[in-house]
Length: 358
Image 1 (cartoon, rainbow, N blue to C red):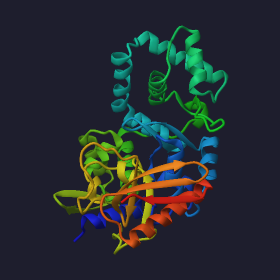
Image 2: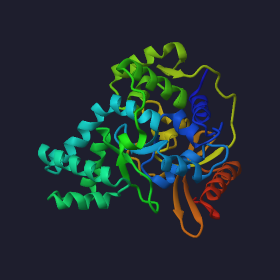
Image 3: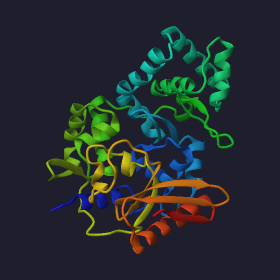
Image 4: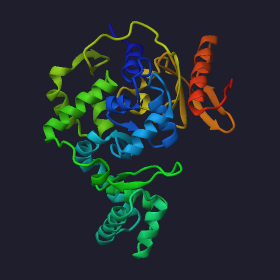
């Protein structure tokens, strides 16, 4: 009989947190899309899943365009491989795009003509000179009488990303830039709708399972009908089991038989191990110690696949991790978190400090 804790442990293995991948490319491809709202912390989200956590490999993949950082799913930033970004956007953008468009038109008063002119301007600018940042593109829009700054500029560029016109360019001095998608990733294989649904369902389950159909629908911004259709098309490559009134889908194989190493993890709240699910997310809290309701944590502290506290990271001459426990921590809990802090500090090239607030 599989328990909630078994599922949580299984997911950490599936997601490379306790069975690391050979490198950053394998992580991004294996998870299909890795949430990347905070660029620097998202770098750790990828690196901590590899056998040799370093920033350089992901930086290189982004510079080459083998991986792009763009808006896809829900909608928010994700790392996606160049091979996957086109078909994934084609499949999911029709449900995500209206959310962004509504904010631009209803909240900020943009007209269709204004949006068309903005799209033309940005694409012309990037065709002449790729790798421009948001400020440079806003200045180009201003020259044509279009005032867009802050949140509006983010929404405009997000809309163009969803329309498969632009994506991330080469980072410049740590700043995010934009380039034309067609020039950045070139022509890639396209998929019919049913093939794309099956591929998305299979890849999500292999990279996140065990997971439910509702987890998939949430993660991919699909209707439940489309999530079920994709899973049905991929059924022959996946296995299932019933637990707590739900059907869980997973890649063929058995769950872990107990605790795994490393035991402790310090991650951002939007990490795939938490944000990659909705329906069954709280298998991470078997004891029910995490406050329910509005999320106030910035980061999460895990020990043996269970949430043991909220976490805040502060980077200065050293990196400090402040953990506020949800329950009293044992000596082994604190040792596991100390090890996690040391790994994170080594990745950043800084001395680390773990503070547990009792």
